[in-house]
Image 1 (cartoon, one colour):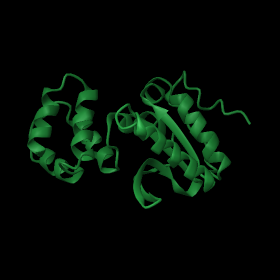
Image 2: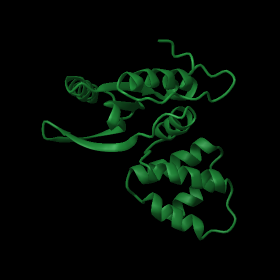
Image 3: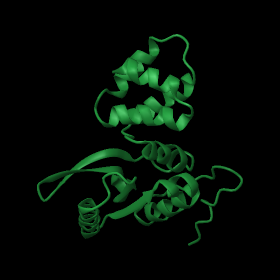
Image 4: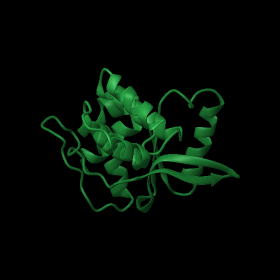
Length: 186
């Protein structure tokens, strides 16, 4: 499986595709980031090796999709937010659920919603999950692909507001000249 994933990344036309192959393989539990890293180390020449190694590292932290990888890179890391725990399992009404990113110390959960798994009855499952979090005095924030990809600075600012309100004493950092994350206000 690991050789197949690496071969697919080498045929990929862009970095999003490379990320998606790694995230999909690890997220669907067809392989692990550790096994991919070991297989990568055994290869000599590979296109985009540094990026591939970085994506495997993000997958090792629990990013199971391109959207989750982008959140990690463009929102959390780019703005120096605290590092959240990924794919944290919890049980609600006897049913296991996984939160995409949890900032436990700051009682904040971030859900990253692609279209798959968030249509039909699953929408109501997500609402119940958000309501249960609110009931336990936890903030539950939800973002989609366009938010993370095209509004990452705004998303980081909003998450910073919530984290600060829940006790984070840090401050986000600007990711560049046009970054709006420092416009936190009071």
